[in-house]
Structure formats: C-alpha cells, structure tokens
View 1 (cartoon, rainbow, N blue to C red):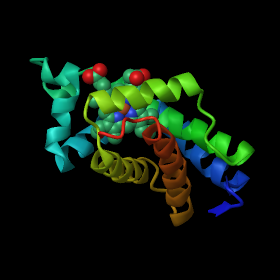
View 2: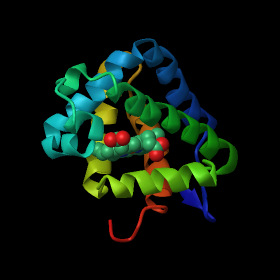
View 3: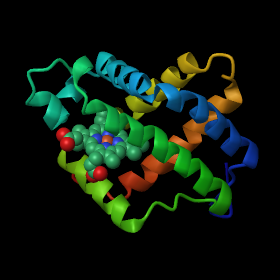
View 4: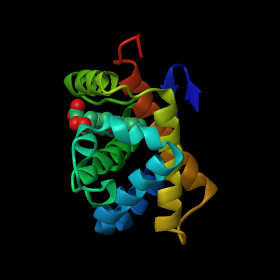
Length: 160
Ligand code: HEM
C-alpha cells in the first residue's frame, strides 16, 4: 500500500516477517538450499548464471556457496520489512544497492528471475512454518521482497 509516496507497512506486518524468520533461521542452511532448488526447478537456466555452479563439478544441491546467497535474500527481506515500517521506504545503503544492481546486471538477472524467486521464497516459507502461514504473512513477505527488489532494479543498467 502506498500513500503520498510513502509505503504503508505496519508493525503487524513487520512482526509477521520477523517472527517467521526467527523460527526459520534455525534451519537456514536447509531452507536456503530448498529455496534455490525450487528456483532451478522452475527456471533451470538460472543455474548457469551462478559462476560457482557453472564452474563446479559439485552438483548444485551439494554446493555450499548457494547458502550465503539464499541467506542474503531472507535477511535483506527482513531488514527491508523493518525499514519499510520505520521510514516507509527501503533504506539499504546507497553503496550496497549500487553493488547489488551492478552484480545482478552483470550476471544477467532479469525480471522473470526476480518473479520466480518471489514465488519460490513464499512457497519455501509456507512449507517451513505451516502453522504460522496466513494470507497476511504472505502479503507481508511479498511486499518486503517487492520493495527491496524495486530498489535493486533501480540500480541495474537499462540494458537489462
Ligand atoms: C532480494 C533479492 C536478492 C538479493 C537480496 C540478492 C543478493 C545478492 C548478493 C548479496 C550477492 C553477492 C554479490 C554482491 O553483494 O554484489 C548476489 C549475487 C548474485 N545473485 Fe543475487 N540477490 C537477489 C536476487 C537474485 C535473483 C532473483 C537471482 C537470479 C535467480 C540472483 C542471482 C545472483 C547471481 C547470479 C549472483 C552472482 C553469483 C556469483 O558470484 O556467481 N540474485 N546476490
């Protein structure tokens, strides 16, 4: 929801994101892997973008380098939720956003990848905390992700 340029993200929405993450973080290695296996199942070509997967003889599901990227997605969505609630916008440092924009441009990440990742992220959370899952929780994570991704995309080159 948006009003006068500021996004309305409530304390309840922030709490929904943070309480589910506080449960999920205990299994973050497994969840991170699950998230990316879902992404690759839907969009197999996405695997080729990751240099450490492309150049490695180790199968993706055993590659330890997938975890840090998945953690970044989860953790930055949580941070985005807190920032949206406090200030009505994503306030990731300018230098970090510029770097993320440049990296994702360089590796050929396009809108569809962000869409697939959103779907896979919400499915992963739903399966991880079925007892907490609700339409409100889905919307809260979805908004935190969408606004974070919009901020990253704003720093991506127009050629992508
Ligand atoms: C909220 C969404 C996302 C966040 C927060 C995120 C975060 C990051 C971070 C922190 C890095 C490490 C490099 C750097 O700091 O510049 C990275 C690299 C990368 N990300 Fe993402 N990412 C997101 C979404 C995606 C999506 C949707 C894809 C494609 C499916 C993707 C593909 C990549 C690739 C290919 C790299 C480079 C990996 C390599 O070194 O080979 N990212 N991302």
